Length: 173
Image (tube, rainbow, N blue to C red; front, side):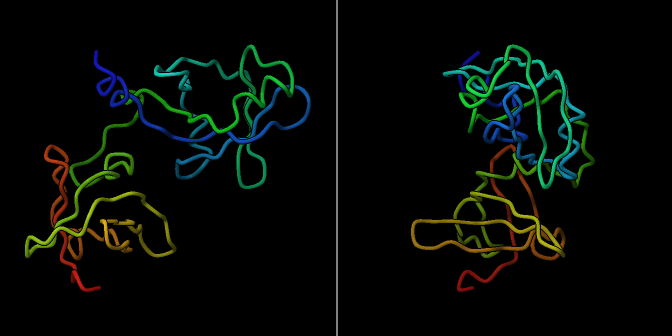
């Protein structure tokens, strides 16, 4: 399996923050909605060098706006601190199957965004949740745009196979 195929088999669902306390607990930022859904997935994988390694979660709990987690083989603050900044991933096969018009954010990031007049706006570099709808951060070499992810109204077609998305959006905006 190539490096790209291995990376494609995993979906990043969170990031480890700093150590919490002295017994090896870590803060976790969850990329799932709601954030506690991250705790439903097992096992978790952390990237070590170029490969994803399985890590067993001994205990986890919500705390404030984030989560706390305790891994096996992490007994103290020093060991926990070494994991700070690591991405948390799960195997793609652990995700629920989506309906035809549903997408995981991780699958949208990187798509080229093209207007219905065939003008390239750039690539999606990030997805954001807002109160009313999700927003795509689309960037090219000249500018960065915020484009609402509203299917049928702004988003006309998502073509994951060709890494493209067609949108009804004014390139001057």
